Image 1 (cartoon, rainbow, N blue to C red):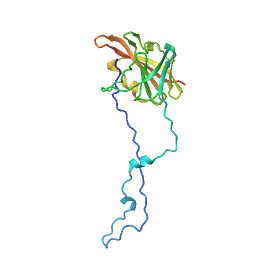
Image 2: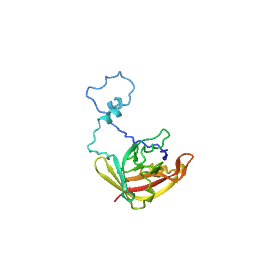
Image 3: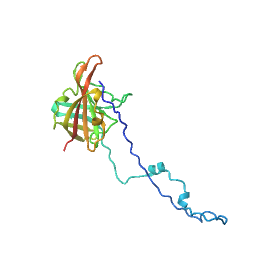
Image 4: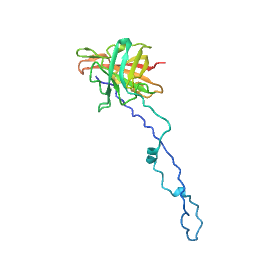
Amino acid sequence: MTWGSRRFAAGAAVLALFLGGSCSGGSGPPERPAGPARPATSQAAQDPPADGAAAVEEFRSVRGYQPTPVPIQVTIPKIRVTSSLEWLGKEQDGSIVAPHQWAVAGWYALGPRPGEPASAVILGHVDSKSGPAVFFRLRELRQGDLVAVTRQDGSTVRFVVDRTEQYPKKQFPTEAVYFPTLTPTLRLVTCGGEFDRATGHYRSNFIVFASLAP
């Protein structure tokens, strides 16, 4: 089972910190022999440039910050799914590692956490050699159905289904699934379409698009 590759590079936010020079005490530079007048040079201009890295290390925000708790469970009442969440990384080719257990869904841990203003992604197998897997009934979801994600601190964030789509794996909608959003969203991904016996994989992906419940 393969998943869509993240072919875009996430932009890194850069903090530019500008510090003015400080004046130091003393009588100033020694007098020069008489000669042509020269423009006056301030002491600040002679000081070495400020060390930006050191300044950032010393910076302390007056605001407190609580990171979004990590997800540990997904629940989808409509299709009777309750699954713990495996943390997933990336393969060498850039695609997401598939969940290791058929009955357990996985959260893409290198991406946003559910509840953050971005697109969190949870993946699950549709079936196995022995029968249905955790997301076997995912295609039964309809607009307005509930998806709940329980987090490590005991809190729960709820999403409602906006729409469902199926795409050939060669046309996986990378931007629609992974690109940042201004509000918290959730993407549930599994396999679908025809099964290719030659490769042992389905030819399509089935995706549920959900947004934060009001």
